[in-house]
Image (cartoon, rainbow, N blue to C red):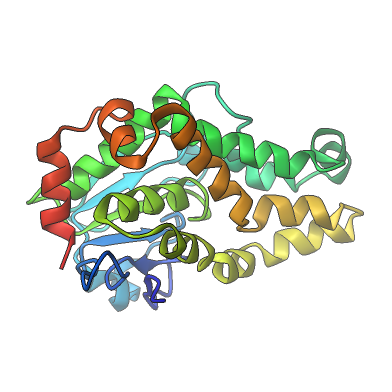
Amino acid sequence: MQCSQIVGSSTVSNLRDLGGVALSGSDRVRPGLAFRSGGLHRLDARADPAFAALGIRTVVDLRTARERSVRPDRMPGGAHLLVADVLADPAGTGTVARLAAALADPRLAEQEFGDGRAAAAMAADYRAFVTAESARQSYRHLLTALAHRDGGPVLFHCTAGKDRTGWGAALVLLLLGADESTVTAEYLAVDEAVRAEFTALVAAFTAAGGDPEIADAVVGVRPAYLRAALQAVADGWGDVESYARAGLGLKDETIGHLRENLVA
């Protein structure tokens, strides 16, 4: 089962091209048009020829205002920035937007997330990715950008490139015709890169007495989190097609253009 392709960027973490992912029949995602990653705060396109060669024209930033303020994107030249704050509404727990803060103070982390509450909080955030108004608006913007015939290549990202970005990739692939096992494999494929990115933070947390289970729940890429989002779609709308139309407000024309652009 083929997952997204790693792009060997030296300044952008967890950068992958969705191109090549298997869809229904013999179809694949068209390469070079839909990219996912972690934050762009270290981007240096002049020193990073692999990134520069992508020719990114649209960047969709799924982060909160605070995240954007602390680590603003370094935009590739000529690219358009689209801010799509998934967690702008007070829904879920906000854990995914406070990843670093959750691991900065072991005592506070234990108070907030001990006894299995970290994993429960993450699952609650994933449900909010589906149901919160700000999330639905943000993912509508993302899918519309990918459907725009003159807007690509498109790069979408959050901070780690695993949660808000992971659900965004899942939505794209499901609407293009990927089955759930393929979507799950793609979701899990970033785990190694994410853990590598946060190795120092997790090591400092555990060295200071932090619970390794809390760290793993926050940093790890767990199938249960994706299942929480998929279940929220099923509970509220039945299937992803209905969710795209009734939940996200996408027109049939937009969904059609998305498939025309990205299915090879």
